Image (cartoon, rainbow, N blue to C red):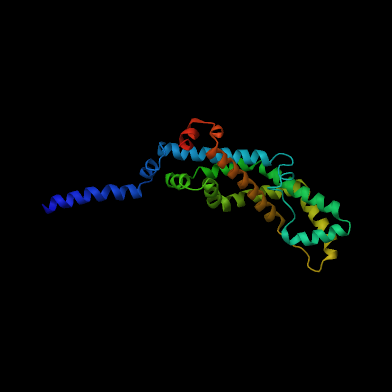
Length: 232
């Protein structure tokens, strides 16, 4: 009798434990009819679609400069000096510098797509479970959390080249050589690091926009796997 009771108890406990630990069972219990392979493939496709859309949008001329959501202004520590410099007739130089910062980011974003896509390939089933159960930008947050250091190290040389190519570094030096005459605290900003950070913020902003669209708008699900994963 004791053996029978023990068998019944174990037969009840094992499935519950397995359900709590197995990501595939979590997927099946989440209300989504997709397989685990579909789930991962769909999320990767959504992120790739978002990354490509963001890269394409921001790499166009004025992609940063004429978009208030992502436009790169001078660093906060330089803005007080900028205001003073404008009062002394350096407004045109300040505008040229801001334009050049944004041009550098736009140039660099043309090469951002492959960097994002390579990082997206690392997603696994457990990641997929957490993302599907998360907020409407959970996939973007996953991408930012897991890839930011790698993306920064890969993206920064591209920004460096863009800063040189667009003449931004020389404009920066010229502007602050002149502007620092009006300040007792000269500005010494890591220009490359600043533009890299702002460019990546812009990219993640539009990856999140695309992710929300895919989750909420059936017309944005442009493949069968996206329709299966996000259709429930």
